[in-house]
Amino acid sequence: MPREIVIIGAGPGGLASAILLGAAGFKVTLLEKMHTVGGRTSSIEEKGFRFDLGPTFFLYPKILDEIMQVAGTSLRREVEMVRLDPQYRVQFGAGGQIDATADPVRMEEQIAKLCPKDAGGFRKFMADNRNKFNSIRNCLERPFLGWSSLLAKEVLASITHIRPWESVDDYLHKFFSDERVRLAFSFQSKYLGMSPFRCPSLFSILSYLEYDYGVWHPVGGCGEVSRAMARVAERMGVDVRLNESVDSLEFVGKKVVAVRTKVGRYASDALVINADFAHAMRTLVPDALRNQWTNKKLDEKNYSCSTFMLYLGVKGGFPEMPHHTIQISPEYRKNLQEIEDLKVLPSVPSFYVQNACVTDRSLAPEGHSTIYLLAPVPHRTANIDWVEEKSKFRDQLLDAAEAAGFGGLKSRICFEKIVTPDDWEQSYSIHLGATFNLAHSLKQMLHFRPGNRFGDLEGVYLAGGGTHPGSGLPVIYEGARITAKLICEDYRVPFSMESVAPSWVENQEQCSGPIAAKVAVQAASHC
Image (cartoon, rainbow, N blue to C red; front, side, top):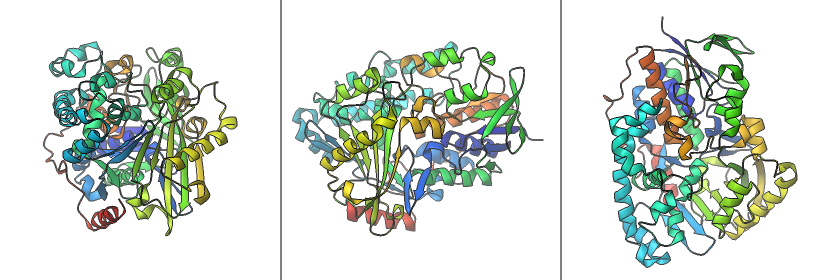
């Protein structure tokens, strides 16, 4: 009989694990408490509008494509996608802007408008990070199960590229002298919920990946990718059960033998936890069964920032604005200090706006558009009473968005939903509302992060942003692949990715297919 695997949480890590384990022949049950799959990578659908709940950038499609191939399909076959150009616009409160593009000539021209002597740094940055990425890729594709993992040949060979003593901003000084230009290549550290002045320089590869592999928009939003993954998992025999939250785990010693919900009991040879790590530990695993990750130790860890979200359905559209806009506060360093150190609301916030209907008209009713507005804020803290502050901060953000190019936004709103750090914790079970999970500081990376094979329990594995390699969709997919491979090794089931022929063409303009072609034409006419 095939081994029985239970996966808690149908987020991107749980879905990717389910596909790989189902394809390997395990009997897999995937339990999700929400009414839809995807976790934070799901959709909000109301009154004809569709918004991504969380991630809106789809990066480095190669990993998910390889996972899809194990199931006999491909990402291109399952989801229509468009590569964006410009990838996004970065607007600086201190003056100037950059429309990020993979075209080196156009990119150098824009950098030169901000700082002429920095223009030549772009190709040097790309070359250096291409070499870095190729050198450290093996580190990101392997588990880190303890100190001995650091002695692996490929890890030792990559140390000169990882440079753990250097921040992203420190590293970027080698290429760019103007702080605005450096910010255009370092704001990506916010994908990890961190400041570029603290984020390890390893993560400069995030910006590099955008230029070499593209920033993509899945037609229908990133939630459509989650729905496609669920369909593929079901084709692999996975039993996907929605609206079924886990009440408790059944232990024999330190081994989980079953998962209980209000619907029933699911026997488990192995358990994959894709729920928020700190929340799952506190609610499902008795403190006495945990050694390294006790409640006391969880309290001592550093957690990422949170996000304040506005999902707006509006009359008309903003065809003059790009798909993605990042507005950098003129007081960016102060902004980060307020969020990370002082744990207070930023006085002059940076924020991000997705204006997706310039690319994808399927997201809103005729004559309307969707606007997704996000501001990084502290995770839950006694310093901020969101009941008191929510309306004021909402008005502050809308005023700032209007000044940043979305004129008349407030008067055109016909649908609105707000999500605060309180909501992230209470409605989506995210510890402290820290939407990017455990912070990616040096003391919380590699083997310092909760292991993909969870050491405190037997037969328990982790997937998602709380384990190695960390947060961000492509990183979570890679982490799920590491986890699935460990399970296959532990149960002596063949696991092979090497024989899969690559189907994702790097640097392609857009996926093929009639819908993709139609959306590409729409994008060209609007952008």
